[in-house]
Image 1 (cartoon, rainbow, N blue to C red):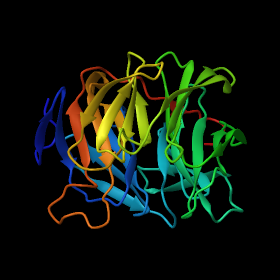
Image 2 (image 1 turned 60 degrees about the horizontal axis):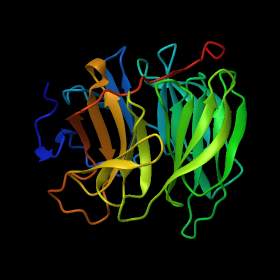
Image 3 (image 1 turned 90 degrees about the vertical axis):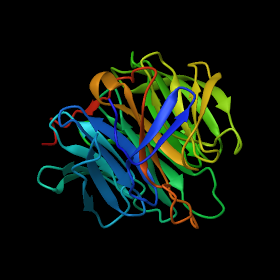
Image 4 (image 1 turned 30 degrees about the horizontal axis):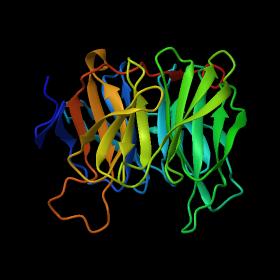
Length: 304
């Protein structure tokens, strides 16, 4: 199946098409909704949440009063979304906020929420980032429970990113985009407890500073190398087994979509000074050589 028509570039095992030429400032957090058969994603500086079909049609969006930093699916059909300092439930069918779930680091003006994913425990995991010129390890990773309680799980971060679980739900991968590492944790899906932390990869600007990520059905971790224009695939133990050049300079996050989760969709950002004809900031898609791990849904039964 072919997705999109704007651009076709062949790179090793992946053939990228431009699904949506949006020239977004920082497109992030792509999530495939199998019930609606569509893609949701955010444009962080554009303060917008977007929806588009997998053939590029039906593009609609909603704007907010703050940055929209990441999103996830819920069991009820709502979306859970991280704004700058709040987690909300949003109704994409009605086009309005359903309710505020929790505030996070509301008292700080130098941090904001960043990458977030729903875990196999039915909770929303979301991290913060230090948003100043001289960034320091003051950010954290949080767990927002189905009741709306907020638990700080990891601290000492600069820019929390790259949250993804394996198919079995017993491993959590997590990165720090500024400290430039990828960690792997053992994960208890029944309780949300993290243990046995292991640093599996240390990267640099040339190999690809780790941004958003996804895990495939074989347990391999796909990381957007935002500084190097690549999509890197790591084994569960951190060996880089593949590095795929990307059509534009700064991919931000992959996700798996479509029938059998065999399409790989990757968001990107648009650097300042990008040429007028550059597709940087677009949404790209390729047929994946492997299926993706299933996406989880936030258990919002106590909130709706």
